[in-house]
Image 1 (cartoon, helix red, strand yellow):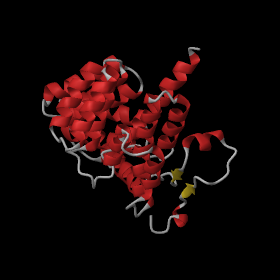
Image 2 (image 1 turned 180 degrees about the vertical axis):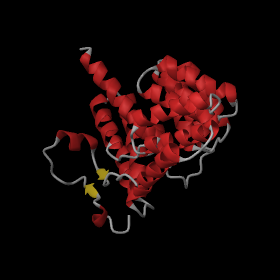
Image 3 (image 1 turned 90 degrees about the vertical axis):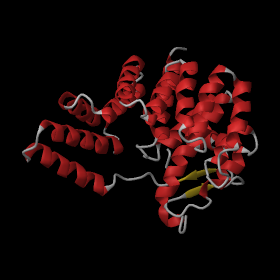
Length: 292
């Protein structure tokens, strides 16, 4: 999250507005920008091999081994191997029970699994150990948001925003939670907070979309502006399509929202908040459909 020269050569496809199509999905989503999904970084594979070798062979104490387990867990998480990451975070905590960031990661994973009470416990542990751990407030806020406690989520997002008031993503998550409490008041507050966000930051356009100052078509048309690599494009699309999904969801366009979440997920930007929760959004949509 809070992260074209020769576009054809990079596998980028622009679906132009004037192109004829028989796909209801394409016509409902308008102009799309599609990037080649990110492959697993070879550096991550090398890091996993080296960390495993050190853990298995080196003569190290428990504190050092805990850090290595945590480091390997972070790499596993970054390539989408959540179960292996979770195993390593738990191993790290057994050896070093005050490893704050391991609690934070476990909380994220429990949120993704919809085990919200366990997620709260993990984030509470992180905050008890390190009260100024700002991302624990973000992640607990997200857990509370998806756990159906939007007002408590607002409280955590306000703490998170207070650390950096010009960050568009902090503004957006607070808005999403406030929107679940009072839509009109949330929109008014979003407009007030938007003033602090620099217009040069691309994500300011997401805020403009939500405020009705930018059309969806124009927002999508702007996605390739000032992008010079496929990596930059996939990062941006992961974010953009997640927030487009939330935008469609807020306007009762649930089928369109699902397609946007799938597009966010297709980027393979596993480390981004938007990728993590695009999957959760799809899980929740599937569960809702099964109830009818």
